Image 1: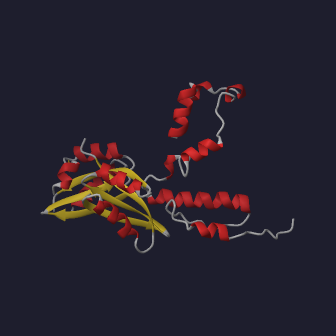
Image 2: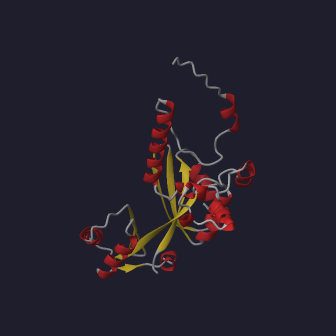
Image 3: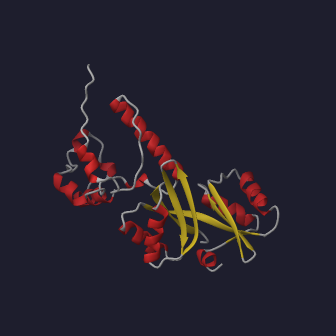
Length: 142
Length: 101
């Protein structure tokens, strides 16, 4: 239900690669709402949250790029001290490991994007905690 | 792999059917035409990239180990995007094995 997909793209870790990938998205008229880049030595993975994921995947694959989709959770937390700690504590109590996490504040709303291998379990745990998970539509409308 | 999923379905072969060596005779050969039809990477298993940078790092380690087992030297393995290697480089290099038995 309130899950969302990131688009992950394999890139070489060298100048011009970010420009190359984002040009494909720009030319396809895809808007990027959130981005992160992780690297391991000579290569890396760029992850995007976009307004038109199908269009983005199609246009990237057309250019010969390696693309995959990745389901994540977007959690809205109170914009105050201790919010991330509360989420981390909740996940820890359920024995859920966080693979990647990113957070930001937009219009005074604090959002955490969480990647975990135990997505369903994490979703249930966070909802039980009374936290709200954003739908892709809500995320794009921030 | 979509290519063989379709081919096996067309031949009516299912994974459960394969119990003996005799059953293996029902499997199709991979022909040159198959390779042409699926060039360049249609016959590669699709699971190689799942968006996890640590899985890519693990893949690189595995490739290094597998090549080392074959070559008896540890090669430097880099993962690069499909189609990004210059064609001329592979052709220009010749490897001459001067090791004695």
